[in-house]
Amino acid sequence: MISSIKKDFGAAYGTAKSGIGISSMGVLKPEIIMKSIIPVVMAGILGIYGMIVAVILAQKSKKPIFFKSS
Image (cartoon, rainbow, N blue to C red; front, side, top):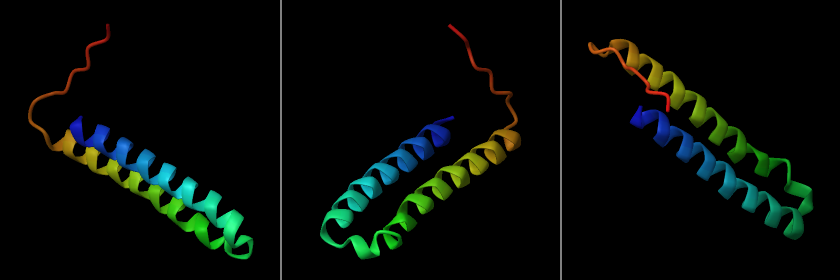
């Protein structure tokens, strides 16, 4: 569960920082804006990888994981 939260925050942070970089790159050097999209894609891949790891760890745990709804 904690790893799932951390991967979400990491992917969101990476996407936000990449978005800031793309915005400034579009102002300073608009001809290379397509190259600056790569960090956004990598941040998304990081989020997907974190989700896969969280599912694998949850399946290997001996105790069942219960989520309480409030």
